[in-house]
Amino acid sequence: LVMGLGSFGGGVGVVRYLAQQGARVLATDLRRAEELAPALTALADLDVEYVLGEHRERDFDAAELVIANPAVAPSNALLERARARGARISSEMELFLEACPARVIAITGTQGKSSTSAFTAQLLEHSGIPVHLGGNIGRSLLDATAAMRADDWCVVEISSYQLEALAAPAALTARVAAVCIVNVLADHLERHGTLDAYRAAKLRILQLVADDGVALLPGCDERLATAPLARGRRELYWPPDAARQPSAAQRAAGWHVDAGSFRCGALEVGFVADFAVPGRFQRGNALAALALARAAGAAPERLRAAIPRLAGLEYRMQELGVRAGHRVIDNGVSTTPDSTLAALADMREPVVLLCGGKAKNLPLDELVECARSKVALALCFGAAAEPLARAFAARGVDAQAVADVPTAVARAFERAREGQAILFSPACASFDAYLNFEQRAQHFRACLPPRDGGAAG
Image 1 (cartoon, rainbow, N blue to C red):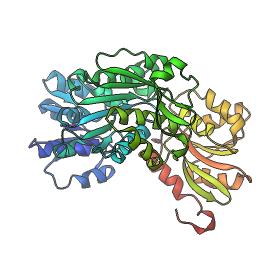
Image 2 (image 1 turned 90 degrees about the vertical axis):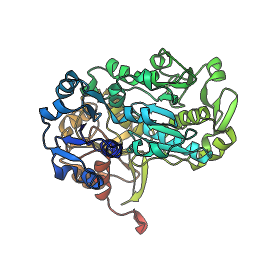
Image 3 (image 1 turned 45 degrees about the vertical axis):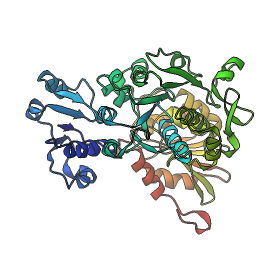
Image 4 (image 1 turned 30 degrees about the vertical axis):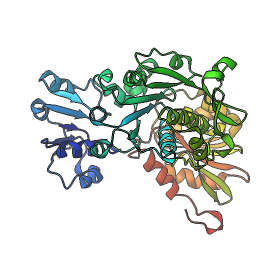
């Protein structure tokens, strides 16, 4: 029984994998068929039974194995019901880690885990090392395990939900050669309840590392840097934009940026000037990726040559050109105040900020304080529009609540003055009006005027 087809490929991947293994598969989802059209089309060639628009208790009573979507909390009543009747409760990620013959690099974090995963995979590829990229970044790797070899590498992004769902992480360590926690910031408190519980879910990744593996942790966060390890060795890295930087002794042993170079101790593995991905915060993600690629055996000279070729992911401080006289930046990946704060810190000119969506009830103090010196106008849309606008206005920031993204875009170009940039960085979840952050960012782009000079895109 597969509970929840999901929006990022995991449900489709696990249904296909189980069907190919000869299992009799029933997939159930609370959404209707028309809402799941892409997933159902992708699975049309398989003999799968579907129960859509509802979950039936009798299906959970009859199941021998239940694969739950990460969005389903482990304490869900139907999962408890199936467990009480002897069913095994598992997840797509757990099945992957059990089946994967390749060596694994597992990466988690609140912000930057996708970029760090993508950079790590690119560095390995440019170093001539066979690599597969997947997990929470948007692709299930289950269907690729049959073609993997023992000397391949898999870079896997893992969310807190996926880590929480692993029944026995310590039993899955055989092929996990390296793990990394990029950071832990306030997010997903509606699921985890408290920041401490969220951090504990993230720390479960440390249980995955093999005896001879590496746990890469940010030295700037003492709680993460000193977290106990059951196995493996600890390596620390210091993102160059972090408030806390390494001492001389820590630089001698850890990964850091010094004199314009990415370094581990005295080993120089590349130059910051060669790293072209926008966003100063991305340098920390690149540093972590260099450390992980080095742990996988990539040679320093190959890493040095690969740095200029690193490409950022979409919707992360992505330049969309000059439009109607204003530089436009898409940071649509932002779903938290912290991620918009990092984006504002990177802006060199005054900003018309487009933000909003569904509030996560996270602290806004640092964001609105930063906005006082960075934001000329905040245009707040969606379900959180009114409270967001009030929060900005209370600190003296010019702010307006508007209905939706198209209205925010139109108002931005009406109000923006010469020399001001337009930054789309929502700082809120997308689920008030969109399937996910990508759909919201694509809608933002569709509302933009053409590039100045007639360039496409």
